[in-house]
Image 1 (cartoon, rainbow, N blue to C red):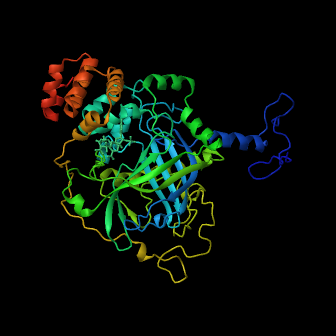
Image 2 (cartoon, protein in one colour; image 1 turned 180 degrees about the vertical axis):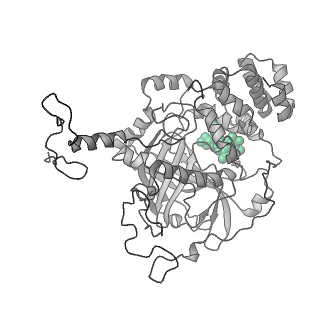
Image 3 (tube, rainbow, N blue to C red; image 1 turned 120 degrees about the horizontal axis):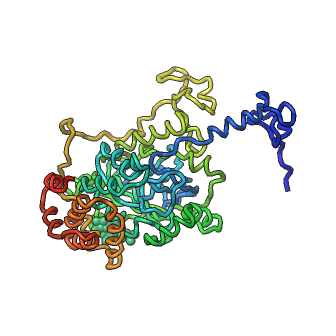
Length: 502
Ligand code: NDP
């Protein structure tokens, strides 16, 4: 056994006694001059940082990504430049709506965030375990999240809020169908897929670009929990998925995912039947088959949870040359919001924290000062550009090729002709088994039954529009007047809202 080090204060001053505060007399009041006590209490008082407003509860691990197929015709991203090439990664999985201490076994999307420490800086793929999302305009995001959290008066989750918003937001039907399917409660973080959900742009050495969607397919196989199993687990072990990830890696059962992509040329995108920047839609595999890219393996547990997992900060705007944003409105807003959140949560120099700082590249920016600047702050080098003193210079070869944008600036309503119910219907009747459908209906009925009748009717009409059988079975489960549901389904959304007003 190694000899333990001597205890010190945070400033390295030796501590002689860590059990007895300094007092005036054996019972007397505590002295102000006990700086060890004061420092210890003051630091303890500040141990908590703001938790993420979404994705607060999470688990993470380190590992690597290895390229298994040549994709250089599509992207010049250096970390994807050669088969066999390995790049260090750090991954954080999470639930979305619950607080930091909430259960892992909840019906909720799961965050799937990957930080690739590439030689061109850190590339963050900040996805979810579902290929779509509830809304496609970021202006709706804060409202949506409010409805998934706690009621302003009762401070409890509220089925009225939850379903009121969704029933007033028909584009959510696809994601709602996935959320209430068995995949809505993954058995563990190891047994779920990850998706970019957004469309991104890849461009190659010649400046030719492609649209791309990422699919990280679990090599452990998909496993889910029924709502009864999840309820039991939540009571017995609210951290089961966090523990599972840690223990699997400790046992040497390193989880892995195969990264595949769908690729679409700009020509194919032109008149495609779905809006490829609408995050409520997928690209059907028959139209755009999956192409293998590589394998991600998690083989390192964090040494310290707070230092690595809690302080890990991902941002969809961290894109490396060869990869660029698409016009997806949700993506555009996330590129602002994640960075903004981390500044609030961790401070303006959060990029200097070891888990967030580049490992295979260096930080050569002109950003200076700010609270908790823990490196040499650029030393004596110039703090402005342009300069004549050898400071870092921009490299035009890493610029994204120029692209066209057109159109009138306005608050445009969504106008793509394809409707919001088709893909939810496809999932229901083409992909799900009889058992999947039975579980889906049971999961919806048990949750939606907590909402008011007018909301139940409005939501059942949306299920009906996805597939009449889907709507009928939800209506039956909730004991709703099916004729009423059918009539509501025939109405426009505005008429339906009026007809189901309280
Ligand atoms: P495919 O039959 O080619 O693909 C169906 C996909 O659905 C598979 O990727 C499968 O994943 C996944 N899946 C199976 N069960 C569920 C579930 N309960 N919830 C969510 N996904 C599930 O069909 P299409 O590509 O034509 O898509 C049909 C529908 O499948 C879509 O409308 C969408 O709802 C869903 N889907 C499509 C994806 C895509 O990118 N095209 C991705 C995920 C879902 P696995 O291979 O892991 O079993």
